Image (cartoon, rainbow, N blue to C red; front, side, top):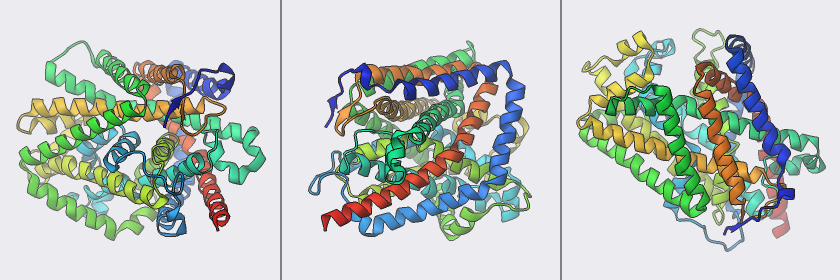
Length: 509
């Protein structure tokens, strides 16, 4: 595939490359100087959007899921992303590994261990029933079919744009060309691309705000280091940067190798916890029951908006998650579409659900139900500790420390998180590098200098923000707010794909 692009400064879109970076850096500076004021303003805007337009996100979420089934099992599903007789570039395992690891960062381990506790202490769970019945349901719901439908439908649109239409502009706006027409090359297209890169950078910074402190907490617990969590976090960020930079500069072979290594570590961790944790029976049975309850109540969960605002559960969780996943839709679907050459639309969507959703569900079932099992059986009271301190990182460490060979588990968790971050950032840096070009033919990769530039840029902001917790919180709010227009662009891209795909099928008749 992949011939390297020569470094042609004239072909680099410096406006799209630099402006979003400057905006993010400027916002970070403002957040650091005026933390309280900006936190208040952004919190109000974020609340207003979630409170006023929550149904907007819910409709889009359920709608795109239904569209994914329609595309997979209609005539659209037969469209091959490439030449008519072309075979897939990667094996199902290699493809699935890259897809899964690009779509989920180390957050999945953080939330797999802890999210059940956040639901268990939420008043909405008491309204529905017991912790045993519902605390394991919502992680599966919020991390499975609807979020992955965002990725997979857009991946199909990008893959069609790249491998069938052979478009030389590998950008968000280009996928909207069937709808925007000539305006794609004008101000509307530039606005879409600026928004996409801005959301990508903000989402990247947000991701680090969640799980990196857990990695620092693991190191502190293992080695009893006293240099401070901030210093440890920066060291972790730099180490991760070195890993993903090396893999990216090796091209797709390096990314594929790292993704497969991540998958081996990930499933090795799950098997180890399941075998030695002593909760295998409870874990499997509760996971099976939770999955069934999610399927049984799926429509109700997807449309629940809490009109009376009795708990604000929908606004704080479901709507928040859909918005957050939309921000990540800038990078992950583009990368998935890129690596899906040779597969049909049906294969991409169904394969994505099998590997992506399947792996995600297994993670929450195994890691989440271990801690919940100890809680519901009365062996350990994690919830009292969490309600008293609010420290999720300490909660996760305490959960792991109840396992046999806890230090070994902690080391594997640490290595897996680094691998997850590295593989996720490979895809983000690659996508950003593609955005930096005015034109980039299918089969061409960005120049290594451009890739290296983005590898460095993507790590500088999180390092800068790690010194200010308020900045992290504000950047998270910015990324969620930016999802509002991103959702509208997603609709245009999907409509554009359906329109262009119909035209393509008519051409073949």
